[in-house]
Image (cartoon, rainbow, N blue to C red; front, side, top):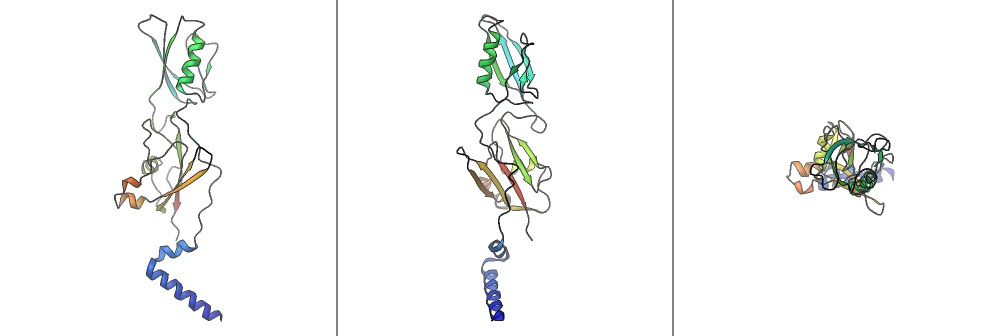
Length: 223
């Protein structure tokens, strides 16, 4: 009876190999790798000021032709120090530019008549700087796993993110790149991206555009 069962199973596997190929057989038995819960996708609600971000601040009084321009960097406590406000650093961690502008305007009203304030993000080094536009985490079989800065253009794709992380390791599975994204309601949505389809078949439309907070996980080939 056992021998007969084995023969039936062997015949079934052979038929599957003939019709679908070896990789399809593996997929019948393989299970999805567990999700790393130590790093989770985050919902992104717009660019924010955070420690390490550079700001260009212009301050002028009403009627003043040339404003004072300052290039400042947010310190590790999430604060910036501005002229005339040396004794009271401005806490700005997590603020939008508009919220920070309102806060600075209110602070300067004690020293300047009708202050005119302008604020913008300073240019930053994509590799070494801190992006106010957030990051994506590239993990798994890449040379330099970790966060990758999102550019101001917000057009970072899966392939570009992997390149920024040093590229794939030799045994990375180019057909199984998992992208995890946090939706607004807190649910985690996962999408598989096939780099072979993108590169060798020219399907650049499949090169998924990432959002800040996404996680790109590069699987290892299963032998």
